[in-house]
Every structure is written in C-alpha cells, then in structure tokens.
Length: 294
Image 1 (cartoon, rainbow, N blue to C red):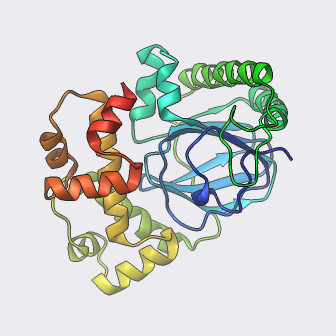
Image 2 (tube, one colour):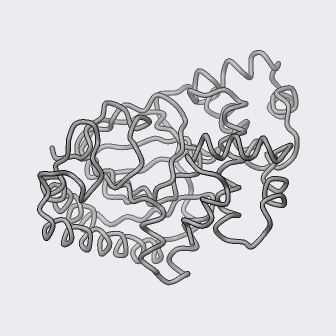
C-alpha cells in the first residue's frame, strides 16, 4: 500500500494533497475538512452519515464531494478502497468549467458506478504514493525531499486529469439515485440520528436548542444528546457549528455578500462568534478564506 502522509486516523490528516489505498482507515467521529474528497470502492462497502443522510458507496462506485460538509464513516465491510484528497483551493485553481465545479457545492456527493475508472485511478494512486513519498509527519505533495520535481509535476497533472474524469463520469450518473442505508448501527438509532442531523442541516441558519432538535424526533433532550454523540462521534452543538461553518464557506466562495451578512445567513449569533469558529475550523479569517478561494 502506498500513501502519503501516513496517519492512523482520517481526522488527524493535515490539509494537503494526499492519497490512501487499502482497507478503510479509522474514522472516530463526524468531521469536515476543506478538500475535494474522492472515494473509490474497489471491493467491499462504505457506509457514511453524510449531511444528515445515510450513504452507502458500493464496490465499483466512485463518490466525489466537497468535504466541508460534515460526514463520518459509520461502518464498513472491509475491502480494497482508495481515498484521494485535493485541497479545495488547488481544485479551484484548475479553472474548471462552472458546470463541473458547481455540483460540488451542493449538500450531496456525486456518485457513479465506474469500476474500470476506479481501478485505473487506484493503480495510478499507487504510483503517486511512491512519487510523493513523504515523512511520517505528513509532507504535502511536491514538498517531500524524496520527490523528484519532474515526477511530482507529472503526477499533479495526472491527478487533475483523474479528478476531471471522475467529474465527467459523475455528470452522466443518475442524480436521483437513492442513498443507501448503513449496516452495523441499529436501524432505529440510525434513523433517529439521521433525522436529527437532517433537522440541523435544514434549520442551522436559525437559533437552535437541543430541546428543539430532540423534539423534532420525539426524544428527551438528554437521550437525544447521548444517541447522537455515541453514533456520530460529536455532540449536537459541535454538529450545528460544523454545518454553519460549511454554509459560511459556501457563501464566501459563491456570493458577494458582506462578511456580516454571511455570518447572519449561516446562523452565527454574532460576528465575533463567526470569526472565532471560522478561524478555528479553517485556520484563517473569513476574509482570508474568501481571498484564498478566489
């Protein structure tokens, strides 16, 4: 298996271009990161909770999404997988047609059945991993001392071509394809967590309380908090913040709204709260994030 950088858990991966090939990595909680993520399932099955919905990615399928949306691996049937993360700023710098980039700003991943393409990209990813072999601390692609500059440049072009092929294949897929259900988590509990997550996704722009979220699924607040945390790996409050930050990122990149308007539209109660959470999640202020994205 070739990968860069090396890490025991996806949530601990630093921002940057990276690939992993093999069995599903540990994923202990709902998380988000500012990358375009491509999941290639060569064998086995991945069961996610994504944007409030259960989501199954089966053998031969490719899923591509903007990972700013909160998501987490609920269960998997061990198999051969390949993950590719491309920093969103790098993806934007490619200057792809809006018809290809716009779907990634939606709340749902693009999924298509393309086993031959998945196998081809996975084979290429093995080579990319060797060419970008970095330190165990996670050098980003092209900066590792072992990487040959010419090989790195070629690999980056190949990665761009691979992403464009996936987007083109996804554009041909049925956008109405139903989302699958996850496996090991009890169905009743998954329905409750999915309903709570979806309620947050639809209402995070307004003030939200745990009692309000719990009432939407007919649970006592304390029980709702316990069920959500044990299943999703984050508290309801943390998930609300994830959704608000993701919405703010989308508005910063796709609109010309003022910062104060975005803070309000995303559901932050104050400008200081917006700056605090945005800086903690993205490592930069809202203005810096917008400037980098453009």
